[in-house]
Amino acid sequence: MTDDLGLRDRKKALTRRALARAALRLFTEKGFADTTVAEIAAAAQVSTKTFFNYFASKEDVAFADFHQRMELTLAVIAERGDDETVPQLLQRICDRALSLVASHESVIDLADGRARFGLIAREPALRARALELMHSGQRRLAAALAEAYPHVLTEVTAAAVIGGYIGAIQAAMMICLERGDGIEDAVREAMNAGMTIMRGLHSLA
Image (cartoon, rainbow, N blue to C red; front, top):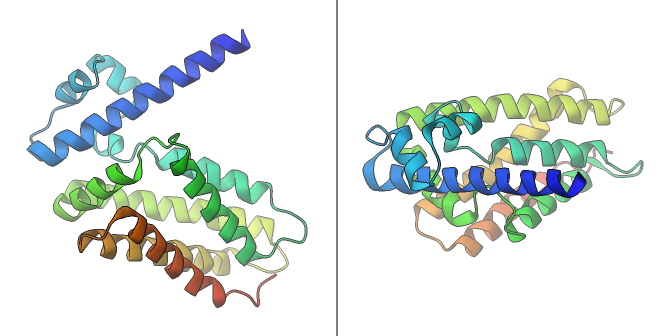
């Protein structure tokens, strides 16, 4: 039974990845508005019904990795060590996220992420969805961080920490990808941006 569940989960992960990558490719080639759900499903070799088993809309398939990254981050916060400081925890979150991509288990890899940055810049519907996810995600992470450090952070200060750290990484990554930097260079610059923010957090336990 355990092996069957493991196989089922792997098949679901592969289907989710196939749909996401097919969608990003079609959005890039045809444009978001001119791509249909049926075309995405066909490119991923599944039915339209299967598409809607995984995603509620075209906007959602473009951000197929959101919940995967969110659950990973929340798990890292929940596992924090008793003596782990806020900057140390943020560094571990970043390391785990990069490890996920390097392991090829991420729903959307770095190359697909680059394509998505370009799409967000061009497509208002995707830009709006990206902002919605960013705001809701930062609220959840701020609440988890405040709960993990109740004597150090309020939910407001935790929101500032999360917003500054994630915002710095995302802004640096977007600039690098927009100007055509390689993926490795973009990741390095994004990590440097995150470290810049963390240097200002060392007064926090």
